[in-house]
Length: 112
Length: 113
Image (cartoon, rainbow over all chains, first blue to last red):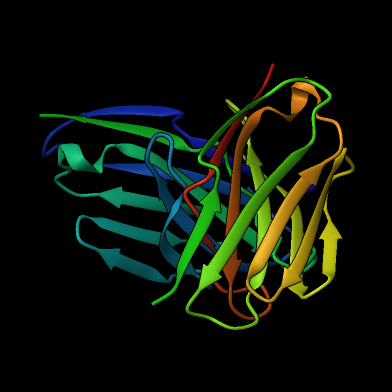
């Protein structure tokens, strides 16, 4: 069965304190892993797509990396505006059309 | 650029009443369209997806239905709402066969009382 686990569930950081969020997945064949940011009461905002192990993508203070079993979202010197819930979603070859398997997310709080 | 709209933004409905949520996409043609539900403490759950007008696939058995009357319009409906239908409903679109990223709308908060 395809599964996605994100850890930690919640993370509190001080402004400038770097850290990483983890996304562990078990899928029958990876066809892309997607990272999203979701603010309270809003739809998820697309951040990155990773397709193969060893791939990395960067955007401002965020860097996403991918291995065969995990993906990490590294946050360097975060600011309060980075506070949000971060969702990861792998998609497999065996899934139905467009079936992303979303994790429950990591809620990040950055204090000034 | 592409934009996606959903309405209404919030909705409070009694048990047993009908439901109609609408989603429209601008700035693209023949998109794949998706309906998700996000319940508190749970991940996003795919409800329906569509690859073209009149083509609907259901992922989860339930009392909800979806329709795509126009290329860029996607509607989520129910004849009789249940308490368990409460949640945050999100519409999304993508290009291609789903390997491409999905872009989400602002969502509709539905409370069934």
